[in-house]
Length: 233
Image 1 (tube, rainbow, N blue to C red):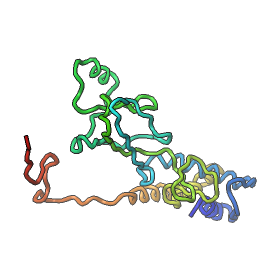
Image 2 (tube, rainbow, N blue to C red):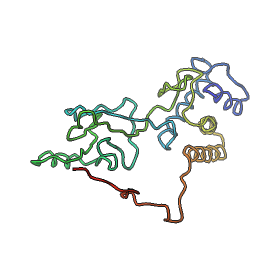
Image 3 (cartoon, one colour):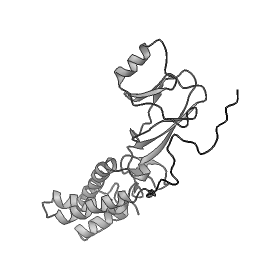
Image 4 (cartoon, helix red, strand yellow):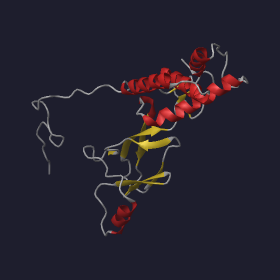
């Protein structure tokens, strides 16, 4: 399963021929399908929450730094409660807040007990500064839809025949087929439907299903602790 096998499958179905190589091949048809493969990952990657798109993000406070560089492959943070601090493990950091709201907070004579966060250009601002040794964790989505054969090196463009799409290969193959037919003026409606259904099905299979209880017998509110909290003076 690689760029070469995906292009070979697509070309075999469209042209009845298969290449021995893709990247660096001077054959016009191979060049076209390579371009279609790039169009497919560029289009499909940001539209779904693919499992390999999620990357752990961790910063450790030093008591002074408030602006942190975002990863070079940063696309967006996970929606919802994004940042969780080891100092306040049960309550997420507040944000993203609007820039004007952050300016208003900074103008106050007191600072918030818990930091707030805001995206500022290519920077993440957490204010006030995290305490020294305070660890904040989050999940972000990467812009890199391709993985090298080592299984870990991510990239934006195809550079080797052994490169892999970071989502199921069938989506890549089906995407190349309907795009090629459309560009050639051929009927691609059925191929487009196959690609769209396969893409949605594969995306739905990326995460395990959560069990939803139909009874509240074993369900506790998120702000309750099933035990006794003892406060020592």
